[in-house]
Amino acid sequence: MYTAQINISLKPGVLDAEGKTVAKNLELLGYPIKKVTTLKVYEVEVEAKTKEEAERILDDACRKMLANPVIQDYEIKLL
Image (cartoon, rainbow, N blue to C red; front, side):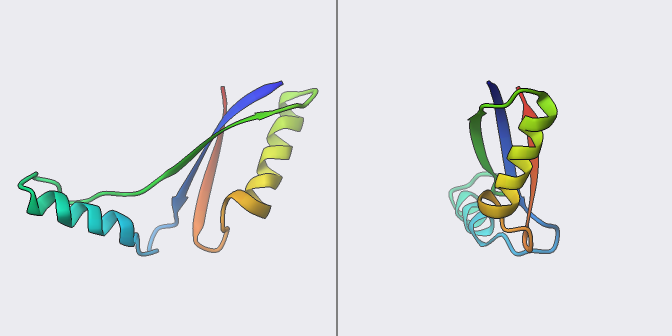
């Protein structure tokens, strides 16, 4: 059994509307915030015999379901 943290972020150049809105509202509240970037984090447990198999399974899950490879990047960290 392996536990992984998967970080999903927008690719460079893709508009982060949620991040822009949060940054704007924080600035309106008086915080000296100029930029906010959103990030999704998943913690996943996967049953696999080897580290390589776990990484392969998680990579496949990211490409097929967890991330949109057209606009998002992902990073898998085995814990």
